[in-house]
Amino acid sequence: MSAPEKNSGNRLLIKVTRDTLPQVKDKYPFIYLERGRLEIDDSSIKWIDCDKNVVRLPIATINCLLLGPGTTLTHEAVKVMAAANCSVCWVGEDSLIFYAAGITPTADSRNLRRQMQLAADKKKAVEVARRMFSRRLPAEELKGKTLKEMMGMEGYRVRQFYEEKAKEYGVGWKGRRYEPGKFKMGDITNQVLTSANAALYGILCSAVHSMGYSPHIGFIHSGSPLPFIYDLADLYKEELCIDLAFALTLEMAGRYDRHKVATAFRKRVIDFNLLARIGPDIEEMLGGSRHAGRHRQ
Image (cartoon, rainbow, N blue to C red):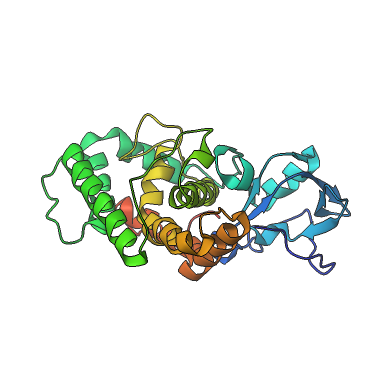
């Protein structure tokens, strides 16, 4: 996930209006940066890497910057990125671990209030969870099922999906395993899954913040830093992360290739048109489309 090539025609004026601000769905999904510095130069954001190469970033057309190890940024750079609603996420090397995200300004708190009202009502919260599960369990009758029952059904389905993908791609599979700080101890399939999942969380966190929702108020997951992000990620993981992991395992022939994973994941996100889907999917999951297309992006 490298930065775009230098192009002096791509400039960012500090003054960005609501009318000219690109929508989330129109933006490039993300760029991963490590070992360098972000700062302002002549009203534009520039990236200076450890070899002193300078790249100007069209920040108004980027949804999220994933900052890896060895990165620094100036206060002025943060101001310009916030004005352009480009989120900043701090991640581990190759975005393997998601640490934190900067919150971008939004026009109002309407979406956050709505999300909180739904989550605070136990009956409505379960209905939101049921809509999320029904996307992944379309053939199942979920009416009247408790959250615990639906989670059990989903867990069984996911395990089956892993087995099906292992058989489809001819990959040995002993189950999903990941221990924080022990990335290299996992097999290749698990390593790709961990990397792709973390990158997906960064993209979703950026989009959720920019639309005025909170990543901390979930409907299925709980007891974790980003429950709403994990709720949403489960809508997309099968195609963007799980299938990708099994597809790449044989190609990498026992050796994890960070560049291959990054390139393949980025291509899937773009082909899947993820950023155009997130807004409408959140509306559907929360039970209405009356605000669709009107989010502050």
